[in-house]
Length: 189
Ligand code: FES
Ligand code: FES
Image 1 (cartoon, rainbow, N blue to C red):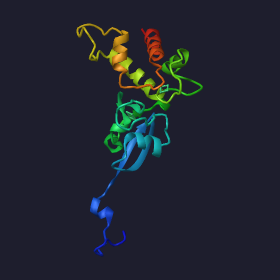
Image 2: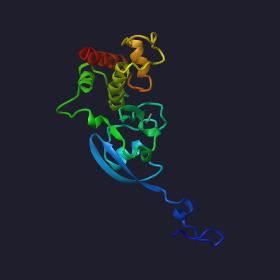
Image 3: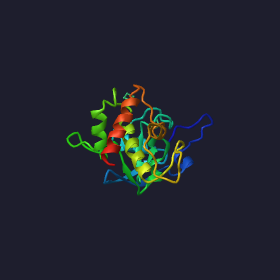
Image 4: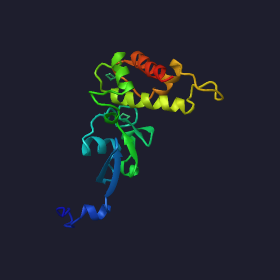
């Protein structure tokens, strides 16, 4: 019970707001998590604060930097811009689901091979996006700079840069990130 207000009235905030929590099941990196979350919890906060998966980073919390990029049902999204309860039952892949320090996946290894980071803060989001854009290109999904929509998409620098444009790197590792993505793409071509 809240203390009385200036007019002596008692106010129950939970009654005023209704039920503000919901059950939510998230399948993260192949593991099921049954949670009860405040409806206002973003997916990013659910991952970081409730599941201790801190690989996805909070850079801007406004959809502007891409540090929080994860995949939901195979599609990359900014986890700071979506509510966790909207993803009840969804399959979520974070950077922790890509590889382990002992067994890196191809994109993680390529970032190391090409010195594609400095502080590393943006790197989980960069790797999640980089992995996703190669899938998008393989699936034939055009971008703003795709010139020919009737043939397979060319993996040009412009194509990669455009698709990675939502992932900012304050350290300016862009040139080497580009090399890392080309390395993985060429290995799988
Ligand atoms: S933290 Fe989500 S886009 Fe910046
Ligand atoms: S490596 Fe520092 S922000 Fe990208």
